[in-house]
Amino acid sequence: MPAVISIAITKSLETLEKEIPADLAPLLPFKNGHLEVPGDMMESGDMVKIGGGSGFFVHENGTIITNKHVVADKDAEYTVLLGNGEKLRATVLARDPIDDVAILNVNHPDKRFPIIPLGSSSHLELGEPVLAIGNALGLFKNTVSKGIISGLSRSIRAASENTQGPPVQELRGLIQTDAAINPGNSGGPLVNLKGHVIGINAAIVFAAQSLGFAIPINAVKRDLEDLEKYGRIRRPLLGLRYIMIDENLKEKMHLPVAEGALIIGQSPHADAIAPESPADKAGLKQRDIITHCNGEKLTNEKTIQDFLEDREVGDALDVKVLREHKEFDSKIILEERL
Image (cartoon, rainbow, N blue to C red; front, side, top):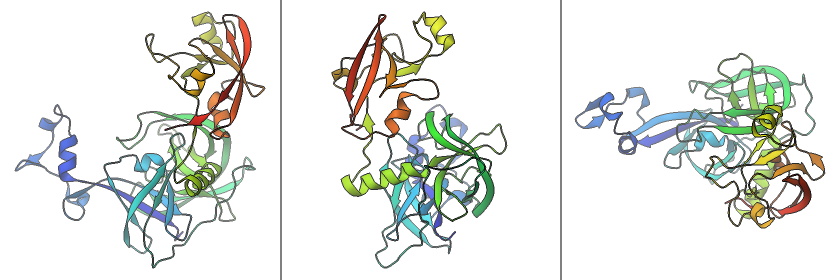
């Protein structure tokens, strides 16, 4: 528990005032030309607390893991609150461009921080007991809840509670648990009974009970290795937009197959293939259907993103493509996502 920390998100009052949309300004309380902020939201000086989350130390030198959506606002400041009440300024070292993972650091040369050892998410079992630890609702530090692993390899579309984060993000390969996860728990560890982290608490379903999700810890270990080796997180880029085909889409769009990934833009006039991207260099075109990746059939349960999760920059993706009822093979060399 000493390795679990709270993260406070703050902004200057002047910055907040500049970000207020013009149509909302008349509806907000102003006094002497400045926005009135409740006293419990004001930090030192003119800094205003706008949110919070959880995280945990993984290196004694002050390296912290949390969710990307907790530290998504690049204009905000982040302060780490230790269990003993000490406050330290945190710097965001890296944000994963795909997974909901971020790496922070607190620079304190004379201090060694307690850490939680990282486990593995490769061999988790349904029914395995787990504990979720975090800063529940941003109010109750070091909240611990017990549960089990309820499901594996889950996929959800999640909206961030942070207004600066992406409005909707698809999260795949998640651990489902019935351990209570609440707003503010985001970024805290999901640990097994050996005390090893197996996931990062990431999402809840507001309309349900006992339904929470965590990012598998293996994604974090990969990001930490990238940061140490390259100074940044490197994730592979394919360079195309697609939707997965099912029976309804097949009938609606008169497609020749009921499974696979249809390459299609977000709108009728938007190109689905990014220029000079790996997909473009491989010769893929709009309305192509990718049916297989590396010999495996693409389905709604096994999408292109699932294959990319285990690939690195420079790897090849062998795909089988259906174009106007003709099938051919193509090799896509993955490049770094910038």
